[in-house]
Image (tube, rainbow, N blue to C red; front, side, top):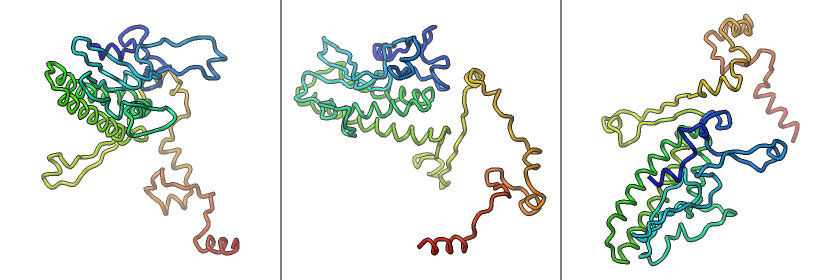
Amino acid sequence: DVFNVMRDSYESTRFSLTEGLAAGPFGTPDRYNKGKGESMVEGAWERPISIFRSTYTFIALTRQRVLFWGPHAAKTTCYVPLSFQMGDVPHMYKSVWQGRFSRQDAYWAFRYVATIAQIKFSYMIKEISELQNELEKKAISKVFPANFSNEQANDIYNSHAQEVLESWWKLADQLVFRYADGFINQVTSEDSPAFKNGKKLTFTSKPTGYPETWLRKVGYSEGPPPLDKSSWDSCLSAETKETKSGLDINSYQPSSVQYPKVKDTLKLNSMRK
């Protein structure tokens, strides 16, 4: 459909911006430019229909006299219907300034999610697309057919705009939680059967690493060898082995490092005073 055309980045073509080293490990289609590096290297990036620095995009349905408006980049925005029947534009679409962050502006909600998506684009864009489809289908159902009075149109479209704004800020929080620190984090929700059956909430954090193809291209295999168990054991003194058997590698402190005792620290602090 037209929404997807607006979001195109040449996927499934030889010009796809979601592939290759320039897309990073997680396939972002966005390409920045006009920096110091670009002034030193002659070249250019392909320019997709959905470009990250868009202020807005829109789709006009002239017969229905409805404008589907999408602040910021089409890839990560959600198109909202605005009708000629509305008495006024919803407050979150009235005005915006890039020099002032506001959670009341739809533009900033979409820009915020777009910025977060750069962390793990190939993962996050799936959740973004899912919410886009849900809300845009709901919006279309309000337009076709639309036999509203002016008052009804104002209430219906304003209510939908507010729902989109709230959903996008909620999405931003969900993405940060789910993909924090390079993991995929999940917790059993309170609405799940597990919780209702009296079981405790459970949290899982799964590492994802990087795609194999990307690792090969950036020379991952040429890095330092992993520390195997025999190498680890040789690093420990006989005393450490005896007193700290089963020591976790993450908690080990080299014996050559001397840490001050609590009483020494207190004495030092009193001397400084």
